[in-house]
Length: 399
RNA sequence: GGGGAGGUACCCAAGCGGCCAAAGGGGGCGGACUGUAAAUCCGCUGGCACCGCCUUCAAAGGUUCGAAUCCUUUCCUCCCCA
View 1 (cartoon, rainbow, N blue to C red):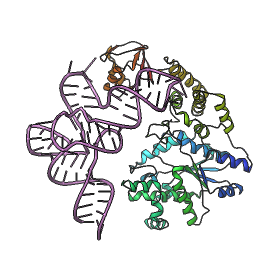
View 2: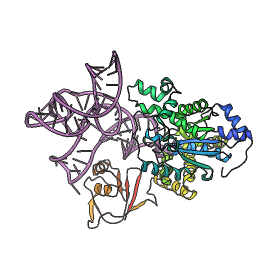
View 3: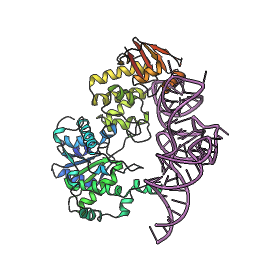
View 4: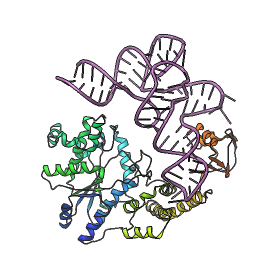
């Protein structure tokens, strides 16, 4: 996996195909690979969501495959297109971001993406570089190459139309601009999730219309989030971020639905199909397989040491339901007060949002101090060191 | 440009002068049960030292003892016609 290596044609194709949803058209990909050229592999990045989650890694890992085969990856930061915001999957128009936010997000993105990509083999471009220079005349000529019907046939738009939801005029330009990126860098292959199929195809179309060798569109499945139903996304809260605490990553993965196990293995790890099948044969309890998955992914984005700790933490906190050794430590947050209403303390420690919530949890017997449930809504805590458990997931040592 | 329908809590959606901190569903959280999860059952779900007070029903004003509900203006969305 690490570093470049040589594979013959069939092996290369096999590596590229693993886990993909569609390659359009597959023949063109074969031709391009056969040519022996160093290919331009494009991925467009939306700088609105700085925190990468496992959903993003699916595509990034595929890019990494291309890098390992010696090709050139070009990440395009959509600093210009973000003025529009990709309408894909959105029922609402997005607010535009300002320059500082975009730059900050792009930086965060880069640091996280290089956990997967080979920095040396990655080129980063900002699409304002060429898009901001397009004149109105050029834009008109560009948009003349596509019909309204063609653009509106896309699901996102047609659904919104049907549902009487708004579509702003500028949103329909988005696919065109993304397509223009492909022209600007002369892409050979563009990657994306299946939700990007339409945009990728428009890129292919435009390249052809402008006399370039059209790009191959390669789509990866969109992985379902921890709820097992909707796609993984930060706004839905069903995500596992790669920069999250090892304990969190491990814990979240352990709470995913069983049905997703196989898919996660294929798209998020390097286990081969055979190895995965072996695991399923070897273990009866999906929990054990999940632990292997959680361990592998935690290790991938943190370290082996962290992964071991996270696994231990999980075992003590959830399997044995005892208090984890390395629970986060918190200092008594007051200078003069030596005792305080418990919900107030929880808020001041940043563990809860409101005292009302704390009061509710108390009423539900969800808060424990030194492993003893507190049921008194008016409970006063005294300064000193103690173990605090709130609900199932929050553990803290107050000192 | 003309006519009509709308904007309610995280989301969908009731309410159309007081009994509304606002039905119902979804989601989330907690408890039970488990394999950690799913499914199921029960409970909670604006804030505040909290049997009371404070801020919420697109925004700003107004009517009223009293407004999410009535009036005015503004902003936003959809539909039909041109």
